[in-house]
Image (cartoon, rainbow, N blue to C red; front, side, top):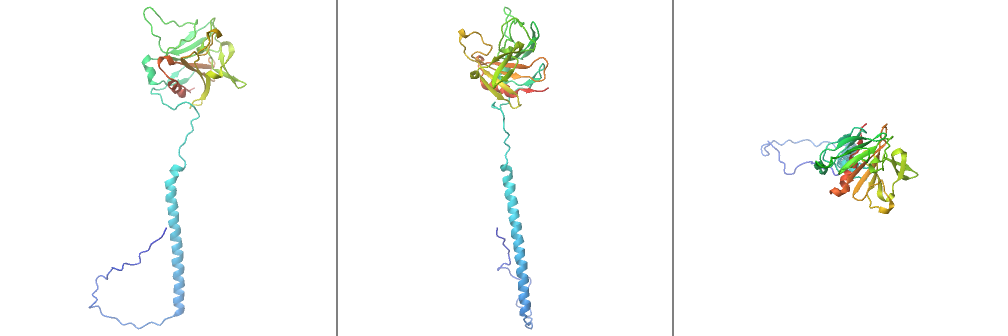
Length: 279
């Protein structure tokens, strides 16, 4: 950067002086001392040299400071890494809580039309099953029946699980699962009485949500009727297995959404992303 010094203006005229009436003073010509002139010249050179150096350095420092002030905000942008493969979409409702297990969740507004989800404890021969879903449509001819003779009946969407000591004289279903276990790199659903059922790799996806919860997502599949019954989901549904820590009654829980109601996996993923243990 060049430093410019204005030493005078050629168009400037003396103010308050009358050139015609000003008396002329005649001065005797001073005697010239060569040594003094050389000394003065050297001193002036040193003064102006050092002055120019420091002014130039100061200007350079100021220019660097201004450059840093301009680039610093964009050098380290806020790039928070999302550890989850779930979409970061905020559901439009406030947080809801499953008190039995301390699990907080939120629902997309598209599910509001089905009413309010209700939490029920269904007793078995031993232990109980936890069932949280929307009310089933009934009429005066058909009544909703909750009993230990069937696994949690999901209506549109819901949560279900069984207690650690659960026993019942019936066949099992998806909402009886008590979370999952990993053995030798393979994933198994934990069924009542500690029974492990291997999860087929073609129907599962292991993900971690923004709150650090590991989730085994299950995609419904069309099964061969001759292959027998399966506790996993059939085509038209999507679900998930989630483990629960530090709970004396429940070791895991399932989630299930019926895609046949016009919902998509994206809405289910929104719910999975919102899951959070609060105690």
